[in-house]
Length: 283
Image (cartoon, rainbow, N blue to C red; front, side):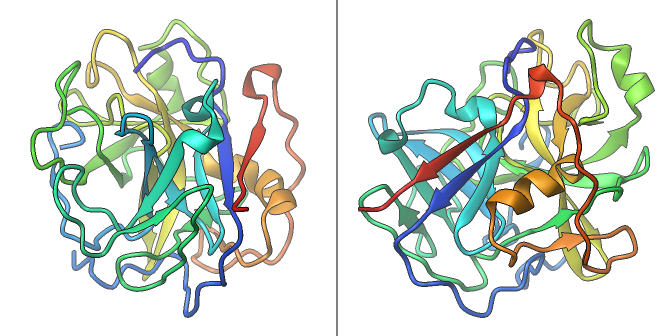
């Protein structure tokens, strides 16, 4: 995972041409009854039903993660789509392993779009503007990335989950020679964190009975996956940007667990955080 990335902002993938999902409630994970991203453990199937695997069809291979935020939109990291032809992407939901059969899996491509909602495929809620986790708060990160620097996830490539603490921006700055801005969030320890291939995936926290996404996996230091806290895009800073581009059925959750009813203030982005919108259009 490179420490020098030109696009650290979130990116939205639109999937059209399918009937709307039914009975969708963001942040609900009925099969999550309760850690190897790095020093994690296999996730129970259905534990993270918003987790998306982005597959490069010409490989095919997993190159980034993402999250389902409503029936038609996926949130991922902008650098995941850098110089990538949209027709070369297949989106997988309900996937558990990368190398075995996935009975609950749904695939979406630019030529075929399949929508299906069940316990294995559900959207996540998003943190509303001003909803920020405190330092040391334990959060969850999920993905199919490497389990260490240049060490791939072993067969059968099961989705990994790990619980890590939020790291204060002040402490995070001591690990990096680049700016860690207020649009970013740091989390991880010297043994646990995200790694190459986890980019675009979620950092989530359960508020009451609702799972809320606070971060998008962005980058870490080149020297290793866990020698410094990992850096995430702070989702709450992009509420207005997301709402301007996505239908109103995306759930934004306030700090007290209630759903946001008002637009967040418009946030001025620095040039480093230029946002882009990619549309995956079915014919």
